[in-house]
Amino acid sequence: MYINFWYPIIRSEDLGEGKPEKVKVLGCNLVAFRDDEGNAHVLSDTCTHRGASLGGGWSLAGKPRIVNNCIVCPYHGWEFGGDGECKNIPSIGYGTKTPPRAKVDSYPVQEKYGIVFAFLGDEPEATRPPLLQIEEYGQPGWRANQVLVLEVDYYFERSIENGLDPAHNEFVHPTHGHSAINRDTYKVRPYETEDHRQGWGFWFMHEFDSPPLPQSDHITAGGQATPWGNTKTVSSNIFAGGGTYGPNIMPTYITITDDKMFRQYFFEQPVDENKTKIFFLNMRNFLLEPEKDGPIHARNKVIAGQDITLLVDLEPRLTPLSNTKEVLMPADKAIVAYRDWLAKFDDKGWRIDWNTFKARHGKDLMYAIPSPGRRTSGNWVLEAVPLFKNRAARKAADEA
Image (tube, rainbow, N blue to C red; front, side):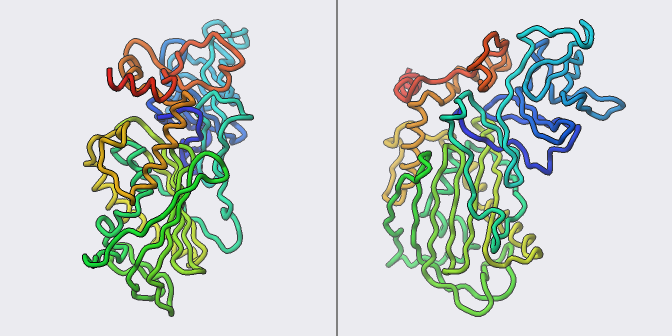
């Protein structure tokens, strides 16, 4: 898991005014809330006074409250603003100057695509990876489904690698219509990967054979047929590809015909090494009627369920540090490209030392993801998450 990237925190519609929401990302406890103007904020969730959860939310008559744009600690009423600084400590009197150490990490926030994102790290704005821009979002001729959130019991890197894999569809997804394999001719076509212009990941496109699908004006959620039009037969050659942006974002493009396309975006939230939340945005430039949203949503759940059934049993649960620990094939070129990019993030010193983190977090101390504020001020109560200096240091720790 890596600091210094944008992570999905919560769907915009799930973050109501006046009600804080607890979230765990990268193993650390966070709290999201809206201030009185409706602006979203994301803070470290551990009060630096006596360790209470700010996300517990002080309440009045059972209703959590945001007071003067501050989230209120339910233990002793300390009030923390969206900038992470404590504004009031009731025990010393409201309006009294608070100690400089009475602060928690506050993270940059962007609210886009129906998702509240937070930049979890301390990299300065000028050099940090930007949030992925979805060019077609909100454009005429494109429709976005409501963001689907999936909670899965496996590590996020395994999830990303599954989405990049061009060789599993015929075996895992019979409802794609690709279940019939000709043993005499079947083979995954060669493809190439290339780093994309944003500079934080790679891209590939793959052509694969697809049997003609029955046509009608509806989409089936669970049946074998997947009709995408109403008159013409779908071409037997479908182009699908994808790539990664940072460690946790994966765009997928599916071109069914020249004028029928899906563009899918997976924003993954690593909770810990055993759990991931996937924020899935599905866009299309056909079947634009709102009544098509429900069936498409249902079908996406069916497909995701097929992947989940498989991935919960993968071993080892974490991605191997060395590719020699698996027998990889040419079809795995995209998986290798992803791992190469993870190695680059390792060498930036952004990977969390997970074993050290687990040994102490929540026991004799609480870690926090370092925020940009740590670049300009010191005297922080919570220790920053432990990081590997580079990939060599990580390898040495794994071999020790």
